[in-house]
Image (cartoon, rainbow, N blue to C red):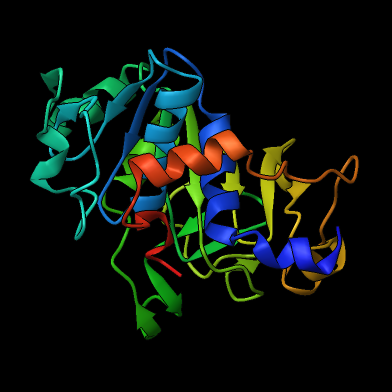
Amino acid sequence: MNSSKKKTLRTSDIMTCALARILRDGENVFHGVSSHMPMVAVMLAKTLHAPNLNHLNIPGGVNPKTIKDAHYSSAGLELLNGAEAAFPLSEVFDLSMRGKLDVAFLSGVQFDVNGNVNASVIGDYNKPKVRLPGGAGSAVLIPTAKKALIWRTKHDKRTFVEKVDFVTTRGNLYKIVTPLCVFEFKNGRLVLDTIHPTSSLEEVMENTGFEVVCDDIRYTPEPTVEELNMLKVIDPSDLRSKEF
């Protein structure tokens, strides 16, 4: 890719579109609090290619009509606007444990080569350097959802490590979308799925704390004109970029 075109591509757009494309029509998809990028990705998928996707969220509004006013949280009452039904959070956990939750959007602070997720502590558990928020719903949803879809807006050797400092949860890890690439969990380990057009294999390797392996060198498709235009409609406040 030429450098001028590379500069025009925004990481937040690449990540949002990559997340949206993973979602399939008819799936039950849940995102939690502080999940602006997944929230926008769900709306993008539902608008462009997955009209029968069921958008589930913490306030409980199933398939809200708009997210335009969700300025402060991805778990606000805006997600009840025009909703088709009410489905409270407690029912989401039950749905997942019954094997009916297709995708759960979750995150963490550390991820290791074996797909373990740390959202608890950095350092020794009894004398940690940093005490993190903890697993919350991820300890239930990652093991029980059909696909745990992770997004993380930081990609460095402190985030992607050989072994996490503490295993908060593990389970049906599917893919991790980062500012540099997409990892896939395959045969018991994270492998490189695609490299973003704004990055390179060398950059991914330099910023990953475990050996990067892949079957083929493939690149994440660039956002299409249709996707970019729709993002302006459904996310005029650019909520998808809040974490950067």
